[in-house]
Length: 294
Length: 277
Image (cartoon, rainbow over all chains, first blue to last red; front, top):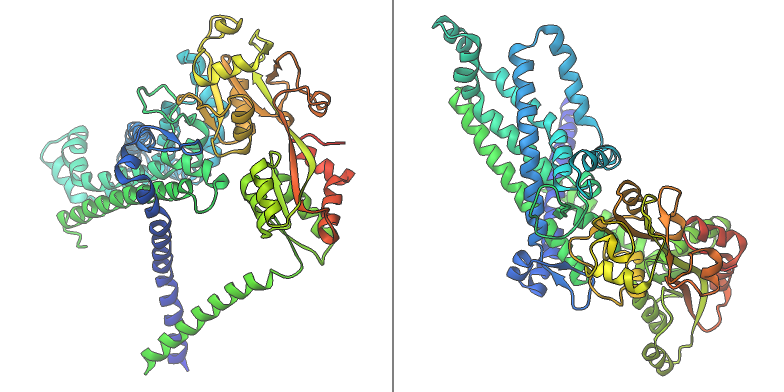
C-alpha cells in the first residue's frame, strides 16, 4: 500500500518536472514556426540589418537594426545602474552591515524585486520622465536614459541577491587568513573576498542583464518608442520587446508583419538564452574553483 | 511492462486534451454570429457583443479583428455575418460582390474622430491639414514655423498598427510616412499623458481622450466636437460601418439594432467614439 502511494507521488512529480520541458519545447516550436517565415519573406540580412521599421506602409519596411541597437543601448545603461547599486548593496549587506541593518535591508531589497513591472513603467512615465525633462532641459523625457534608469533599478534585486549568495559562499577561513596576515578590512574585501566571489557576482550581473533585455512593459512606457538608430542616451528609442508588445495585438495573423514580430521574439529568445548559458558556465567554474563541487 | 503502461497513460491523456481542444472549436459553430474586420470597430463590437450575449443567452457572437479589408472580403466570401469596416466599400470590392451575388449594405454604427492635441502652454490654437502633414512628415520641426513660439516640435504618434494611426495616416497624412524619430505610444491614454507633460509636443487622440490637461486645436478652422463630426465639417473624422449581406435579418438584425439602440450607442461613447444619434 505504502509502496503504491509512493509510486503515484513519484509519477506525479515526474510529470510536473517534465511539463516545463514540454512548455519550453512548445514555445520554441511556435517561435520558430511563426518567426522563420519572416526571414524568408523579408530576407535575413534585410531583416536584421535594415534601418527602417515601417511595418504597415505600402511597401512596408521590416528592418530591425534600430530595435536591436535600442535594446542593447538600454541594457548597457541598465548595467551601469544596477552593477554599482546591486553589487554595492550586496557587499554592504554581507560584509559590513550589522545584524540589525541586515535584517532591515534584505527584506526591503526583496520587496523591490516583487514590484510589478507596470508599476515601474507608470512611475517612470508619470514622475521620472517629466522630472528628467525639466532638469536636463531636453524636449522629451521619455528616452533611452529613462529606460536604463528604470531597468537598472528593476535589475538591482537580481544582481544583489545573487551577488550576496556568492559572497556568503566565500569560506570564513579566507577572511580569517587575510586578517591574520595583517590585511585590513578594505584589503580583505577588495583583494580576497571580491575575487573569490567574482564569478558569482558576474553571474548575477549577467542574469540582471538578461532580465533587463527581456523587460517589456517598463520600456514600452518610458522609452518613447521612436524606431531610429540611437545616437544619444537622451533621445527616444524603441527596444525589441516594446515593438512586439505594442504591435502584436493589432497585426493581421499570418501576415509578414506578424511573422516579423515572432522573428523579433526569436532573436530575443536567443539573446537571453546566450546570457543564461554564459551565466551557467561562469557559475559552474566558480563553484569548482572554491572546491564546492558542482 | 510498467514503462509501457506509463507511456500509455501519457498518450491517452494527451489525446484527450487534443480531443477536447478540437471539439471545443467545432461545437462553437452552431447558432453563431461571426463579426470580423476593422480593429477600429472592434472595441465597439466587443463591448456590444458582451452585453448583447448577456441579454440573449441563446446567441453566440464571436468577434475577430483583421482590418477593414478583411471585414469586407469576408462579407463577400460569406465567411462572416457582419463585416466591420472603418471605410466605405470600394468600387472594385462592390464589383466582386456583384459577381458573387452579394449585396453588401453598410450600416453606420458610430463615427471616429481624431483630435489633434498640444500642450496647454502652447500658444498655437489652430493648424491646417497641410501644416499637420508637414509637421508629421518632418518638413516643419519648430513651432515658430506654424505661428508659435521658438520651440522644437516633439512629435507623438501612435503605433503604426493601431486603428487610430491608420485613420490619422489616411485622413491627415495621405498615407505618407511619419518621420522616424517620432515618439510612438501604445495607447490613446499614453499619447495624452506625454502631450500633457511635454511643452513642445503635438499628438492625436480619439475625441473621447481630450481632457483639460491637453488642448485640442482647430483643424482647418473647425473645432472637433460631436456636432462638427456628425455634420461632416470636421476633417479628421470618418464613419464606421458594419457591413451585412443584404438587409440584416434574424439574430444579426437583432444585434445591429442593439448597437444602434440607446444602450449600444452609450457603449460606443464609452469606448471613445462618437454616437450617431
